[in-house]
Length: 333
Image 1 (spheres, rainbow, N blue to C red):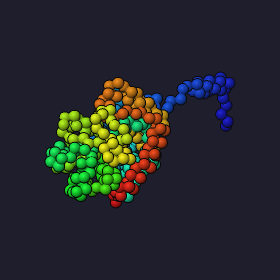
Image 2 (image 1 turned 60 degrees about the horizontal axis):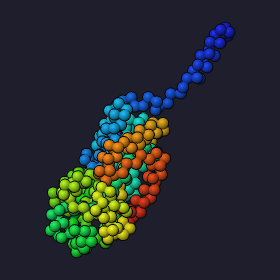
Image 3 (image 1 turned 30 degrees about the vertical axis):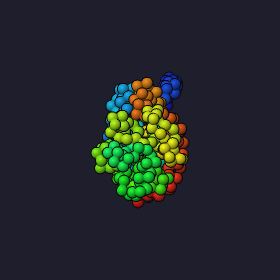
Image 4 (image 1 turned 180 degrees about the vertical axis):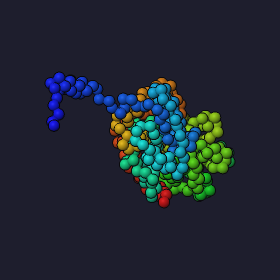
């Protein structure tokens, strides 16, 4: 028997439908976040990646009134933590503080990676670009009368393979900055990789290693305290935080350029509106005077690129570092 509707019932249904159509569309980002967000750091605590993540996490937590937890997942030149982030649910509640190593260098350096930088991630925003800095153990520098880069090059050529070069791990920008230096100067050092810059710096200051090309923010305090001897920054311009330290080009290696950077990534598939909401909030944070002062005092320059800008920047960095890896001859199977 066919169902019959009264005129009143039909009108009521039409009115209800019109009311629903007039209601605003609720997007995924409107309520986000409603719970804890985790920022994975693929290196140990104390390094520049960790510093950048914790500064952002602190202010983001205040802005959104939600806990923002930083978790360190070190190993394999950043590949362990990065792979974990790639496997995370794409809902905006797991983010990655990626680096030039994890998202520009490793794809050319490693024969195999447990993640794909393009397929598995959505770039959110560039947080800070930073220079690296060539710095020596004080006793080593004094013993061998090394006061500048030319002195170091002369010593390295006279003593091939005898100087220990520490790094934060195979494939990191710290490692590759040293490899590029060797290829451009015709010198040879013994690479000693660590699980992060903090233990590497500890051994350089303690004398177990002789020098390091560290990210400036994690070394700044030690340089100012006189615990490390800086010779040159690795960028094409001097750092305002250390105006008396020359660039590598000024110090005798023309054409040298090996800067680092750190940025937020989300797993691929994270809704665009959530990615944009995170980017907008982090960009606001990076403009805060206290945050800018904090980063600039460490030799870093806050950025805040849009997702599209960061994606374009990352692609160019991949091309640049592929050439650096090729020049250095480095390869990890």
